[in-house]
Length: 404
Image (cartoon, rainbow, N blue to C red; front, side, top):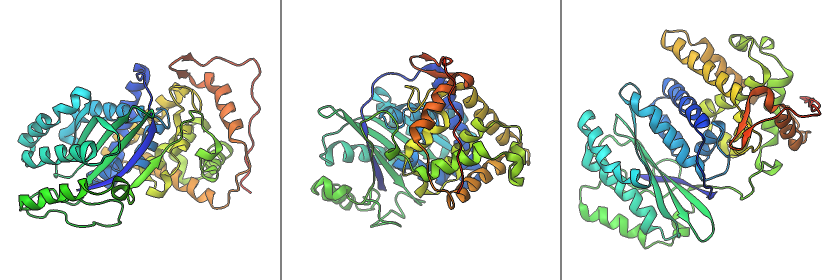
């Protein structure tokens, strides 16, 4: 078992409105389904164990791009949509926030009874990951959320979050058990793959060695323990600023989706008729599905898919959101019937944007892009927790983006 990373986030309060939560559940499930189809269950677990990917995943679904609320809302939405389909997907989500976190052991035992997995070892893994982050790592954060994501092959990830009341921040911890075929016979030892964190062997056949691993990590300075983890630290400001975004990547995305058209790309003919605004959203959804790990260093960029519930960088475009869901769901349904052209087009869309980045020189004002999105938000059913977007008195000027 290895802790794969952490994320430090501004602490946000408040609830996700039902109109967004419903859509997050559907879009989140659809994204996970495509990843399952193309890359498999283990890749879903790897993605969820990456703090940068997870934050980008939440941002593309319309949550505030930098807040602690992404963790609770995304995991809640996924549990709601994945668990009723667990048998066909081969994935299960246990635990949650507050009292629901304490239900994890009983949920794991129930799943173990259905799947034949070793429930005792799963419960031990759940409890130990929580114990290390809540007790052994003395960093001042008290856990209030614990989710255990399990595949029917026995591999799993843990996402949990702690609160630091004195400085108004939250810290999200990601754990990943990778390539474990048996918790007893073939335990992890040492560093597995790229060194992104200390590996703690939970499953040594000698119980004393297991306890020694806990003692080793509990007597190590927390800064030393965490130095190799993938660590995401997000700023306190709520608005999206140029420093929060890779402008070359964002600019190339806007150029391809606004200035070009699907008919100009043979690979995108299955998306012909899709408007530029929906194409912009689909390109970012496609990147979350198919992008390499290095693509997620700037989670704020993914908020340009469907905005944010608090209006940052702009209101959630409900109509566009629904169109994104519809296209993705239709692609999944057709793929199940043997026709994967539409899903392949989404993959090609990501590749075309990536190729355009090579020659793109960013020469635009991101605040102007955000303002244009806000001014046009009413056209796309823009909505925030504060109400519906209103038609402006003075329409904005369109932004021209040039590749060279």
